[in-house]
Length: 389
Image (cartoon, rainbow, N blue to C red; front, side, top):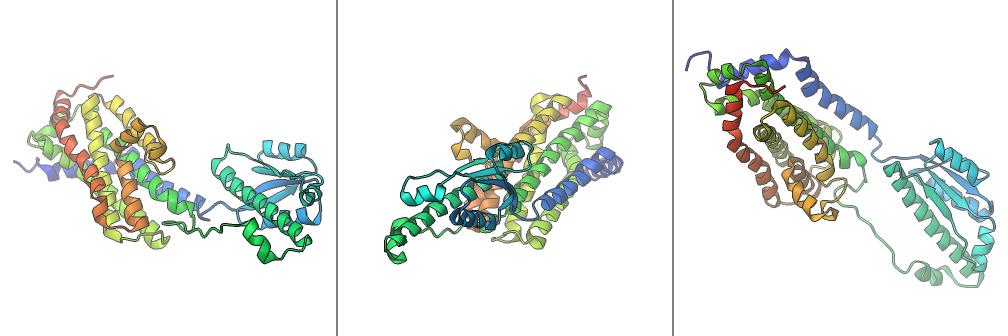
């Protein structure tokens, strides 16, 4: 081995390539930093609040006005408009000035007291899933409270006491204790997966690109010579600078999330750091696997971006994999972000023993072992220097 070959020589060469490439600087450093700042700023309040709605109160009695005031007191709801007609409120929703409409019919209080079962009608705009779902919860709650309030007034008018009435109106009381994220903070729920997902997407694309660009520029043979014709030395030397950078980015994420924003981290630093590090290695391994399977730089890069984007849907944090078709549930295990998510839930949110997460850690490292099968394929691609146009 001469001084111009070996892992360190390849590593230094890759550092120079990264520092001199605007794409690398923007893609590896700037993109994740801007994404983190934007997402944390966007979800700074934790949960969307004061979402505007319109109320069409055709009854306008003391009971309905009290009902409207109670609804406006909810943190998530802001009664921005009190419309005179449903038609006017509908136009406001079409102009996206409001996200829900509550309609109280005429003679609502009179019919309720007389037992005619009037209807409270509400519409939510579920084209905006989060705001629509949150407003649906508030409107459903207020409709239940309205029913109980009217029942209480009617029973009191008939001479019953409140202690006699309440077991009938509410025979079962609910004492809710949300686990893991008791504040229902969307930033805790989403950013801890969105940011690793963005990092995984960047790793996949730049892992494919760092080898594919060598083939495209015709420098594959020279790279193998620098590695003493050892593909292991080439891969370690090429990927080590990226691994160090990605680990630094992961540490930045953890510092911001867990030590500045005080997100839950029940089992401490090391289990989650190991989770991030295994995700980085697994994503780099998947990039090599894709290059080895498709043997085409551009196609492998396209599939890498596709896998990175699909990971957000199939990881299970927005829609449970248990509710998916069985084939999709099984397929989710082929995505590193899925295992990262399960470790995050167990170690950061639930704080259970790390032994229960060993399967997920092993699954992430299994991607690294699987990638070894494709080392020789990548070596042949570098040696042939054939770039398919």
